[in-house]
Image 1 (cartoon, rainbow, N blue to C red):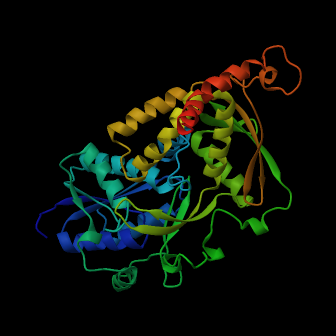
Image 2 (spheres, rainbow, N blue to C red):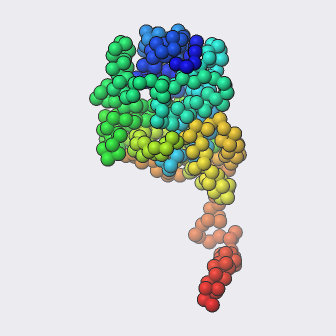
Image 3 (cartoon, rainbow, N blue to C red):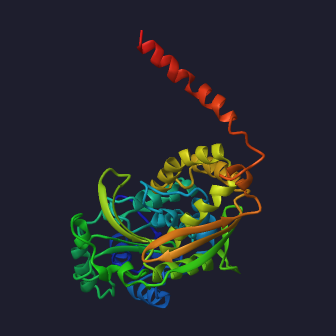
Length: 401
């Protein structure tokens, strides 16, 4: 290696990649390695992660519960924007990486470490997300990205390295998937999924039952919003992470939130991924229903026009960029009156809006009714239509000359 590194803080999940990386960093750089594992709702065995890190040679181990911060400060802001990438992906991994990167740099400062490291490959988006997050908070931090340096060029090679060094990892040749999970979602890539024609095996799913096996009776639920954020389910108040966990449970048992997509990575290639996002799928549907009666038309259309750009910024790793911050301020301004209750039906993989109500509603029955009313003169529509048709009439008259 060309640079001397004394101490590294490694983003450590305890999976195949980062377990191998921990040992590889120690052997390659002859340095001290501190591991950092963020609990953002992935339901890992953190006692086992701690033990594995210790056995593999970590000099110090950080495991921190960041679920509240993750949902409150990253997930909910994105859902206030109805953010979705390429019309399908609810950004589960993309929203987690900036939080992990920020805290990783903070730990590096506390420990006087001169470098940080991650397990993202040189082909994926996560390397960009991690490193943009690092550099946004510490412009001069050294970054070690083993997948761009070592000669372990496949997950098969990593598994062989792990066996050689007695490292316990969950990946097997039978299920060689790369997974990422948190309170918002779980993703699966690799293995048989690299063939976009091959159906995802049913046994990979962990958050949701198959819609075919979901209950034959629909379940109605209500979600309460305040200023664009969900605060209660079925009249019961929840903290942000507990609310998302509750929606995951409800959606999961009805088979809601599965998608199978081929997405366009920031680095230029297409990638096939399978995702489970039960709570997020319900939440986005409910939030849009709440906005439908509380947001002004032109404000909604303006905000909706910004969603593709906003989602792209998050997907590409620019959470801490000034343009994302500016867009967030505008989006949050639109949410002041997005308060009320939405009722939904969960059934066989579907989430259907049944009703919505709000004290801030700008939906007026007396204007919209098909029955008699005294507030709207239908005759006024004639002038409205003729004025809007004026340019069309002129164009046609010109073409008839």
